[in-house]
Amino acid sequence: MRRVFPAHTYGNGPRARCYWNDTAPLPDHPAAEGQITCDVAVIGAGYTGLSAALHLAEAGQDVRVFEAETPGWGASGRNGGFCCLGGSAASDAMLRRMHGEDARRAYRRAEIEAVTTVKSLIADHAISADTHSEGETVLAHTSRAAEGFPDRAARIKSDYGVTPTLISGSELARMGMRGPFHAALTTPIGIALNPLKYTLGLAQAATRAGACIHANSPVIAIRQDGWFHLTTPQARIIARRLIVATNGYSSDDLPDWMRARYIPTQSNVIVTRPLTDDELAAQGWTSRQMCYDHRFFLHYFRLMPDNRLLFGMRGGLFSSPRFDARMHRTIRRHFEAMFPAWAHVETPHSWNGLLSLAPDLTPYAGPIPDMPGAFTGLSYHGNGVSMGTYAGALLADLAMDRTPRHPYPEILRKPPRRWPLGRLRRAMLWPPYAIATLTGG
Image (tube, rainbow, N blue to C red; front, top):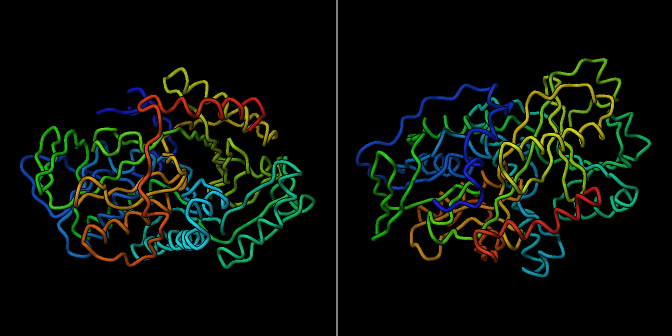
């Protein structure tokens, strides 16, 4: 395997203190063994792979999922649990320039459909995912950012057909959102959830539908001669179709087309112990909304149903036990600056995981161009709960030679270019990260 980060990143160290690990027991999925033949082989048991497997199995396909670790081991089981609009990190101006206004609007409609897809899967399969939050709230960390919220609200109404709620700075405390903010804007689309419970719920639903999930079965070689031939340590697989759903945990040579078409980058999360009513009152934060602030080093946070606060932030281009410890100190410092009344509160859970960035800052779900019958979905730019699930549903239809039943906008159909610098491409992010650090994000 040719991966971008060092071996530590792909081991248990970064996820050892993940809060979600304590909330859901892992089911026993057998490793792949012997000779296996199937209609569709799926590599990766995260949102994209499991969603694809579920939709394929429901359509009567013989589908096998091959996961290097266990379902939800990667980003799908260690993110912040924000099921919301997103998937692209490109601005409206960038999308309009690269694809045109009609394509930009079509992508915005697909974002809504992605959130709806997750909510429907949760309802249809009775997945208990600890959901809360009525949409998502962005908080202005500067007065200048707050001044732009009315225009932002108008764009949201135009693009998504909903009316966002604008909360002035003077009203934030009354809404249970006291902090260093100047205004808030809530878009009533999306839910917060326990990402691991949701992932395992997808796995259970896929298994009930007839899919077979193999844990501890890393695919170490792929060959095509009309059929796909996959190799794991204990199995040889022959499949008619292939879906690669490894996203930020991909390898540049599985398949070779993946090389440099994504940059994995870290996101870091801490979770507090349960906060007391007095502690909540002291800070003045009682809202159950999933929130984020609008800056380069995005902070995202939410008060969960058990009164623990989840607090995450982007950042981290290096990976080792020493750098993980340094990143924990950094995120603690940001947490205490935002919520000073909780500076004494322990954060026993601290972890990180990889998301994926594409050169055009847009996700992709479609064919692997030089491998007929192979498909992939990747680069959701930190919004994989909804868009990763949605991509899996699209890929399932494509793997069955069907026109996708869900909207399939042009932007999702454009294959990503390659980043410059090959395996050294992380270096391209060092300048913007350094500037953001110096300027406070």
